[in-house]
Length: 278
Image (cartoon, rainbow, N blue to C red; front, side, top):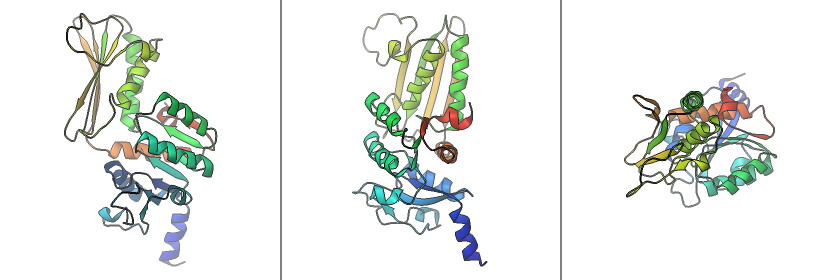
């Protein structure tokens, strides 16, 4: 067997992954992570029909041409893949999911900002293919969720809870999906619902802070990747649990773990707790 045949055989054994939003910041990070893995192969790269990157090699920025081209034909791209990783916008992800369900392609969703109706549709599509949906794919963030669950149970009375998040100036949804998930984890751990406790805005003469509320504060600016801090403020002390991202690499590596997890699933909706065995 010559070297070319051996390489081809090795690639055939790898999990074939497609990346949506291939020319974006997260798309490029995913492509780099796939290129560095020894069990995954970049099978297709998707971008919008008006993207100037169409027709170019998605791995060219690495100096390691992949031999494929960025395309906008979703069906054609997904026909070459076992799994799609999607960090785009809700409307785009929902279109991709419909075709994934039709073709039996697994889907890792890192997109945030879904409506309740869209979340319900994702659950329906998950009856036809396997889906990992998480507001944050970072392994560290998902461990932070577990820490928050523990803290919320122990600090269920006598502590005010505030969630502060900061992201880059281009992020379009607020609070972030991660911040909302943190609020949901805390509320559930305390036997309540976030919708009954959340305070998203404060302006003017607000009066004293209401008991048992969970406040949110949003910061947008510069190139902040993603910072989240949950403050449990009591009398004479406060506890802060924080996660700060200095790179999107953590999101990419978590996404690859999710893709590997889905390789053994036919249908169903999962989250990063399932992926990480938490």
